[in-house]
Length: 125
Image 1 (spheres, one colour):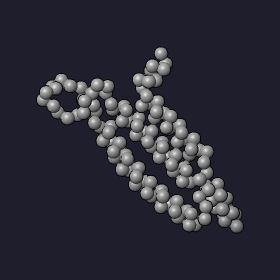
Image 2 (cartoon, one colour):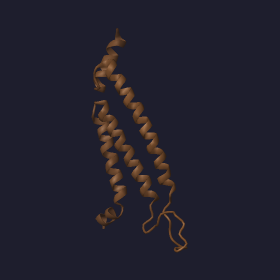
Image 3 (cartoon, helix red, strand yellow):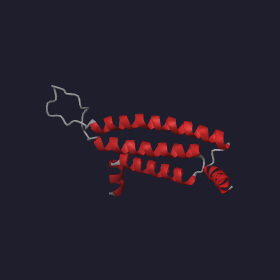
Image 4 (cartoon, helix red, strand yellow):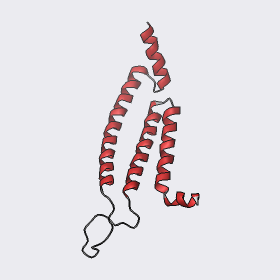
């Protein structure tokens, strides 16, 4: 029974697994690039969840078709919102990578713990 429900709702299950993987990466890795990758995995999980929520089993694309007057249409709004989210995500990624580049230039490392140590050493002086 539980396996059947899991197979029916596989997009939600995949989104939860991706979200968990991204969260573990963000919380356990000290490399800033790996943290960014974890954040992107979390974003992908959110995108998948929203698109899956807008899907209707047996639904057709939301294009008016005179041959099928009573058809059930898939909701296009979640997909449109997620396209906007993807564009914003790419912009934020570019900014984050520019900041990582500056961090490496200033500190010579991408290890978040080492950067925090260097900052505290400078602050204590």
